[in-house]
Image (cartoon, rainbow, N blue to C red; front, side, top):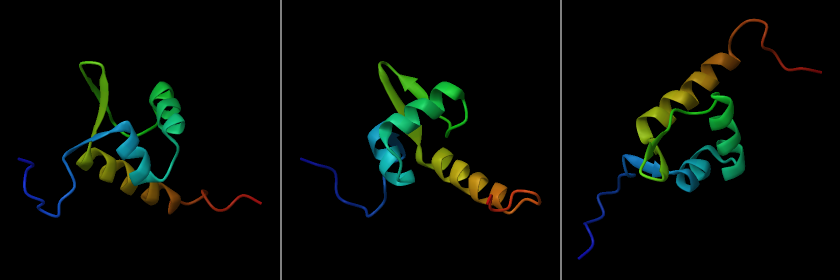
Amino acid sequence: MPPPDTGREPDLLTITEAAELVRAPVATLRYWRHLGTGPRSFRLGRRVLYRADDLRSWIDAQHDGQDAPGRGVRR
């Protein structure tokens, strides 16, 4: 029997689910992971997982970094 739908997203997300959340290709998340610039992730066995809270924190940090002086739109 499947667990009841609570209307919440899961605490742990696969790389595919994380890519959907940040609206980026899976390959981009893999590249960011390689560079160490993407959202925090970890391995559980062979799987790469992301905590929903870490993704939200990373997204917020990216947004806050856009507001920093000297980080305007390039032309």
